[in-house]
Structures are given as C-alpha cells and as structure tokens.
Image 1 (cartoon, rainbow, N blue to C red):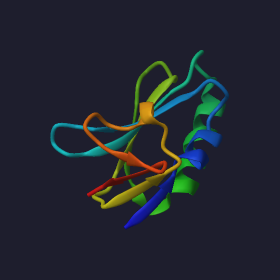
Image 2: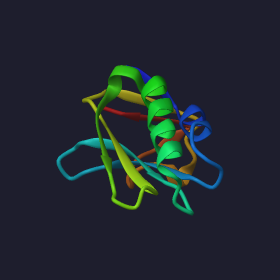
Image 3: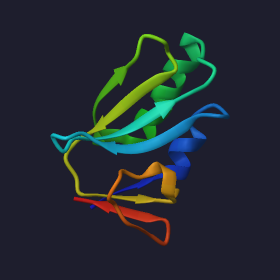
Image 4: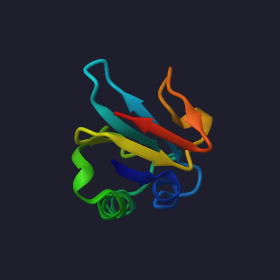
Length: 104
C-alpha cells in the first residue's frame, strides 16, 4: 500500500490553496488542487515539480485548467493510504480514521 502524506502535498502549494482527494465515476483517483488567486506560470510549474517529487512514480498524469489556478493530479491504481487527511479533503462516502484514509 502506497502512503501519501497530505501535509506534504499542502506544504508544496502557496498559502490559501485548497486540496481535495476525489474519485471519478470510473474509479480513477486524483488530487484536486485549487489556488486563489491564480498563480504565475513559473510558480505553477514549481508547484507541479514539488508534487512530482513528493508523489514520485504514483502520478499517472497532470490535468490543468487554462486558468493556472486549478489542476488535477491523477494517480496510478492503488491501493493508497492518505495520512493527515482533513474531513473536507476526502471523497464522499469514505471513512477517515485517526487522520488516515484508505482507498483500494
């Protein structure tokens, strides 16, 4: 099981960023990142680089919105255990126990 520390993901983003774990109907798992206000392209590329360093080979692909303030990090197939998860960060219908979320 791969472990992802949400504190590290949040720390790699500018102040005021919102990070949530989401799951598509197809079962694809992704980390949704939103930054307000939108960031400059250099900072955006730096954020993606930091996320690549944290998640390493767990990333399937990055999907970016045109605005530069919203992107999705699609993950390869799990199972995953997310640590330091806040209730608002988890997909609907999942159970967080002691700050940990397991998704198969």
